[in-house]
Amino acid sequence: MTLALLLEETEKEKMGLGEWIQHHLQDSHEWHLPGLHINLPKFEPIHVLGMQIDLSISLHVVMLWIASLLLILAFWLLFRKQTLVPRGFASVLEGLALFVRDEIAVPNMGEKNGKKMTPYLATVFFFILTLNLMGLVPLFATATGNVSVTAGLAIINFLVTQFQGMRENGVGGYFKALVPGGIPVLLLPIMIPIEILGLFTKPFALAIRLFANMTAGHTVIFALLGLIIVLGSLFVSPVSIAFALFISLMEILIAFIQAYIFTALSALFIGMSMHPEH
Image 1 (spheres, helix red, strand yellow):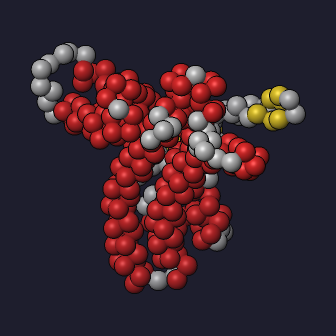
Image 2 (cartoon, rainbow, N blue to C red):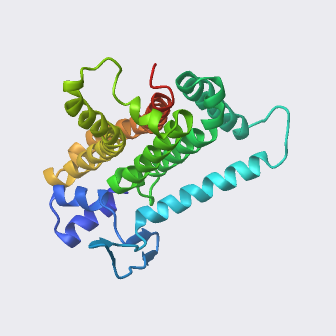
């Protein structure tokens, strides 16, 4: 967002800095493009078992669709012709996929299971990375800055973790392995609820970690740009813009790091469920 647009919005809507930052971090049903204002469709909530489910199409949902489409097109166009040595951007994608397999999947799950789970983990890595990088492009939004999106990714990983653990050890063996061997019987009423609670704290940590890190960087960038308006002086603009640019460059690195951390922790949790003795 340009400084002129920032000034125009704050003057038009008379927002405080905090409200302006919150407005741009939250999800919305509007998408502002150059010369075009898109109102995304809203539907009536569905009530299921006393819960209200909103299936309206929001801006972050659109970002999820765009990221999926970009990845499908990129891999289809670059790898539709099989070559012995990929070139250009195809070699970058292949290198990242091999990194996920050799440095994340195999070390946490073993050779056999690691290679089987590489397609899932690579999909998670590329999807989160694409969403993170899209948030740095003007006119797009950061879907991973929405806790509903990160919670959805964490829930998928939770289901995959339970499924792989039960498939590897059997349903009974999986739940039996939750409690370490040799625990006194009197401690079982305490240990069993703690271990079951631990199953849910792992995806919770995944969701909040990704959400918080992606939100924090954008908050700092908006706050630095907003200082120009708050202080009402253009003399502070070079410093604010310089720091905002530095944080934006840091955000590129953070986009890769957070995609790696989410994927690595996902692989670790799946590996622990499959091999609880390690």
